Image 1 (cartoon, helix red, strand yellow):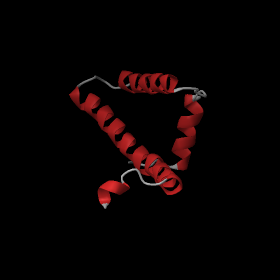
Image 2 (cartoon, rainbow, N blue to C red):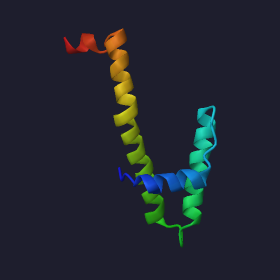
Image 3 (tube, rainbow, N blue to C red):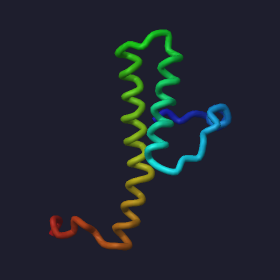
Amino acid sequence: MPYITPEQRERIVNQSRIPPMSDAGQLSFFIAKTIESYLKGRPRINFQELNAVNGVLDTLRAEYQRQVLAPYEDKKKASNGDVWEELRK
């Protein structure tokens, strides 16, 4: 995942004025509109641009799973017990 500099992050966050969201539907809509805005800014929409967006979404999903979801699941497994313990015996 390409990490951008703190200055670039601040500029994007400040310009985007990201609104607070209360549910997954709002988050999905925001992401869709962000993608739409990105594609509208391209000289032309073609397979390469569409595939680039798809790659970003795949990479973001994988990074979210690696850095957010997996550690959360590890904590829950430690506190509540392993669901798959019987299969590993």
